[in-house]
Image 1 (cartoon, rainbow, N blue to C red):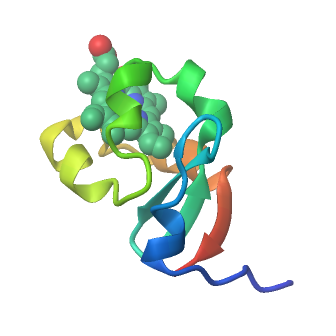
Image 2 (image 1 turned 135 degrees about the horizontal axis):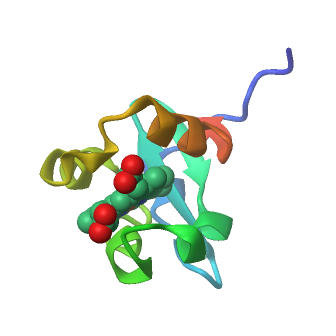
Length: 82
Ligand code: HEM
């Protein structure tokens, strides 16, 4: 398939609000989760804490995300790689 575009962590960090769109990283992958923010079962304010950066420190605190179905949701929003 067509390769994903590559972004730097600095570029990801420029997407921290709904107006700029909300991007996060997980491993070496980049996701535009703007359209999921309002759907998040844990609420909008919590998910926005990770905006512009890595999910890992937050998901380490909320083990509810250690499930295959959560990763499947995330994968649907992939836009690139680091
Ligand atoms: C729950 C997805 C980011 C905090 C959930 C659930 C999903 C989800 C699917 C429900 C899981 C279940 O009950 O089976 C995501 C995705 C995220 C994300 C796709 C990023 C793209 C975050 C962040 C935080 C967070 C950054 C905290 C700073 C929570 C909490 C719950 C939750 C506290 C539990 C809500 C409850 O059951 O009352 N998340 N999450 N999430 N999430 Fe997230």
